[in-house]
Length: 508
Image (cartoon, rainbow, N blue to C red; front, top):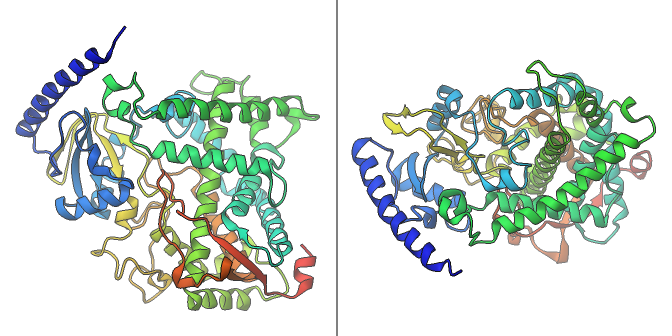
């Protein structure tokens, strides 16, 4: 059966209906300004190869609150701190759910995870489980030794590199994944250094983030969903099979392991909750457990490692900032032991440095989308029910109206006497919201902060850094790759040179 004529006529009809509805809606309601949409596809062509860049450029022309029409979907974009606060604080409850999308359907177990689950009882249950057992202050303190031990392992691996260059992001990813796995599963999942399975896992996570960052035509033009013109759905289904195999093996091994449910890790807790009805009268399923593990592994590993990779790249390019951070650590910690998490609160300059990395290189430059459950008004503009909200975190953090010389890497802006000395990255100050804000703020924010601070502090304290192949710092490629998370276009290849006395490395 030849379906091409059907597709052609459907597109023509859709184009006519789209033009009529778009014209009617703009006449009947005062929508925010935005570029004129194309027939059928709307403003999808305006997004370009790196959407957060394209949307930032459009905001300069149309203002910090924009309306786009992506296919059949109304989309509003917040590109300033004040507009973001309107959506994520004033109208937070109205934008508490996620819009339907192919990634959640085909990869994240059909919305049975924490990240994409609709706002409601099941989402609250999953969030509570994570908040109590993984991200509470007590849980973070109880597993402090795990993070420190894994960072020490990373340090040993870097020392053993000798004169060979290393791909820093890969090693950071192994460290972050093993630290998280020991808390979640009670064991490491990768070996030290270069591990083939670790490379495959990182590739899976990066592929997930790239696919999740794609604007899939089928999400915005339902009639095209069946045809998968970009091949995204096919890739997502194949990736889901790989992730599901990885996670199913972990869950089944955990159930049959000696001591099984006697473990104190998160997965043992989740398995035990399968038999207990929660306060809403439901029970956890194996699928929900795997979906939650997928969220934690995907969101809690590459985001941290890529942030630290950006930090070291910036410090190599700014040796004076590296020197100042190192002098503070040497003064507080000394040179006879490794920095620990308990030292971090005394490292004022390091904390400012980390904030500046989060500002200039937010791990999620374009927020995960939200959807309005009811129509509302923001800054005098009408926001239709069912509108998708995108917050351009990257553009907000580079807003010249808010930041002096916003493209410069300058940690001093967060110190006393700087322009934003009291700025907080935990969702309270909308000028810099790397973890989002409101009800759907990143559940693992506290863990992410600790891990990133500890990793950066350790790498600053223990090594001098040279670029591979004799590359000069000013020639370092700082371009961004496409995807949901902010990856470097070119992996950072470096020579780590130990700077402390040999006995310090021998003792770890």
